[in-house]
Each structure stands twice: as structure tokens, then as C-alpha cells.
Image: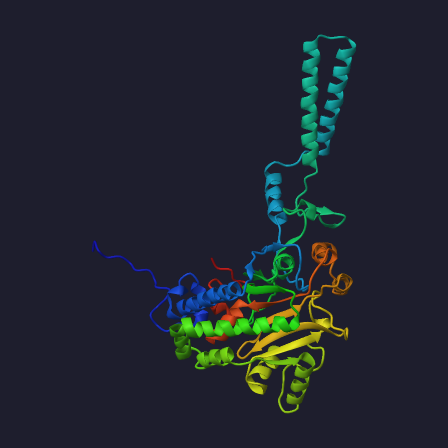
Length: 439
């Protein structure tokens, strides 16, 4: 009996496990063949990213995770604040040590008056120096006590307010702050000084979505190229995606063969096709015309008309059915794109471009940036955004700028595209989505 012990239940049995099940054991799932293979592919793509940009003379810049600017203008951001925790601490403190009453404060004030009069009388009576000093000390003590009581009497439970609004001047950063949705705006400051730069880091969206394409925390690769127009931007994006695909074929073939065997039989062929093909390039207007023609024979869930933001089904039709190649769509309607994109001469479209690929649809979004001060200022106001948080961004135009362009690649989307995995939650080590933030 001495050697007997009760074995705990094994969270990962030797049976075939679904990826959905493994999300409930996020700390143990790297021990499975699938997640470890994805981890190696993710590592290879990260290494390839740095290799590509370093090889082409880009400088790696670390942009802030905490920001006061909303890059997209969507407002779906996680707020960074200490006001709530400070309010909770204050509430506990006030329960333990209640603030003084008005009578207590008034009594302390009266005592200060009395002690002050006592000092005046002693000085008038030409009392000894020792007596006057003792009286002054009592007066000082009374003043300190009154000041302390008066300050504590102003303490109120809850979030501090001023003029009926939250008083952010009492927050940690003395203003509203958020987790970043993009490092693009900040990395532009270095592009204007150092030419080609890129940032690669975590970004956050407080979008309450449970789809297979959304995470609350995800990673973005965002290069910014000085002296580059929209064509240069498209060329760079195409070369980068091709490089990533070829890198996996050259350096991660065993893991890719595992993916082909277990998840997507066409994964390797898809990489080969993208790595060796010239991407199709069409304007947004041309893309809508193609989709409108297709809508005569097939049913799209989302109506096709000029001015819409292309849905995933539209993007996949273009790449998987119509052209059977990666597609770059450019010159989107101004109304559906961000304020920093260059307004074209028609004043209806902006110099924006999206790289669409089979399997996932949009992989990259980019644009030529608006360098004209008055135009970008007007665009910020058109979007209903306050100017004050963007004054530093306007300074980049106000004090001299150059033509520049850039794009952002959703890193997890690239892994989805490469592996054939269906859910984005399975290609990031520690997925964060509504209701879940394990570890």
C-alpha cells in the first residue's frame, strides 16, 4: 500500500483532440503536434519578416503600446486607466476611516483662529520668546490638522468628475489613454527622419466579436516608406508576401507537410502559387464591376454596389474564383477609409490598397499617406475626431514632410493563410477574445 497514490485526471488524453477543446487547456496545448507545428511556422514567419525588412534597409522601431491616438477612428479601443482601481482603494479607505464631518472641519478652523489670536495677544503683551514660539508651534499644528481635515472632507467615493464629466486630469497619464490599434501613426515620425522603417508588435481591438477572424490582441507588421507613392507601396507589399511564402517552403517544409496531411491539402500548393505569381492589380471601381457582374449569376450575402467596404466573400470571390491569384485592389472610396490616406484628384477616392489572398481574403491594408496639412486636418474633422490628440501628427506635415506610404499585415492572418487553419484563435500562443484571457 505504501507505493499507491491517486493519479489526477489527465487534461490531455491520448485521443484525437479538437482545436476548440485545446483552447480550454491553453497552457498545455503547445505539447500537441498541431500547436507546436504552428508555433514553429509562426517563428519562421517572424524571422522572415525581420530578414526581409532588414535586407532591404528598413530600420526596426518599437512603437508605444499605450497611446492617446485612435489610428483607425473606430473608437473600439481598450482604455488604460487607474481611476477605477484608485476609486476602489479610496472606497475601502473611507469605509475604514470615514472622512471628517462639516462640524469637525469647522471646529478645526475655529481652533486655528483661536491659536492665531493667542499668538497675536502674546506678541502684543511682549511675552517671552519661549512663550511666543510655543504658541506659534500650536498654531502651526492646528493649521496642519485643519488642512488635513479639509482635504479629507473633499474625498468622495467613485470616479472623480469635473463639470459632470470624468476628470481624467487625475488619471495616471493625466489624460485618456488606450491600448494601441496600430503603431502606424507613431512609426511615421521615424519615416520622416530615417526613411524606411517598420514596426512589428501587438495591437488591440475592443470589438465584441466571436467570429473566427477576430482577436482582442493580435500582432501587426507595419512598414513605412519615405519618398514612396501607392505603386511603391503595392510593390513592397507584394514582394514581402512572396518572400514569406518562399521562406516557409525553404525553411519549414516538414511542418507545412504536417498541415497538408491534417488540415489543408492545398496549403503548400497555395504557397507555391503566391510565391511565383504576379499579383493582379485592379481599382476598387473595376472590382465592384466584376462583382456586380458575378452577382447576376451567384448570390452574395452582402449587396454589391459602389461605396461598400468589400466583404470577405467578395474578396475571396476575386482571389479564388475570378482570378485564382492574389489580387491588389486600390483607390477605395474616401468615405470608408481612414483620415490619413491621400485624397485622390477626383476627391471621391483615396490612394488606399488592400492585398487579397485565397483562403483569408484581406491580408494587407495600406495607403499613400496624405502629406497636405490642410487636407488631412479637414479629414480628421470630417471623421468626427478631436484635433488635440492629433496635433503632434499634424506637426509632421506642418513642419515639413515628404511623400510616404505604408501598410499593415495582420500576422495571424498570414499564419491562417499559410497553414489552412480555420480559426485565428488557434494560431496565436495565448488567444484573447471576449470572455477569455487565460494566463
